[in-house]
Image (cartoon, rainbow, N blue to C red; front, side):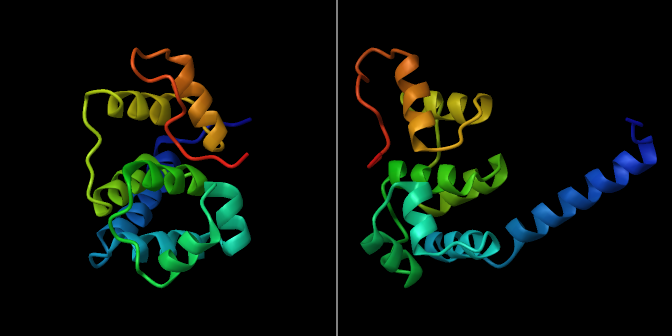
Length: 146
């Protein structure tokens, strides 16, 4: 497989950055508004939302009607994981929910898992969290109906 030249790599890299930055730099949104945008970009409906986030239909409708802007941190993480957001998108959504992940437990574990593991669903996240065997944290942090 041929490798990209510096010019080809730079152009696609620059285009990717510009696309992501433009999306994030768009007008200030609420947590609900930005989540709705992410779901629309992926053609999500209620069934997909429930399946991917392990959250319920009532929450989906509240979110869809822009009535959820300060969810629990763990709820915001369920959504970030379900949407498979990149680091920028995840950080923005968590900030819109009113949180900042800090370098203290359990936040540091959340950051480590999200940045270093191939998390495909809520159960993957919970299993990775429990595998860390953190003192005082013996239950899965995120809601999962599976």
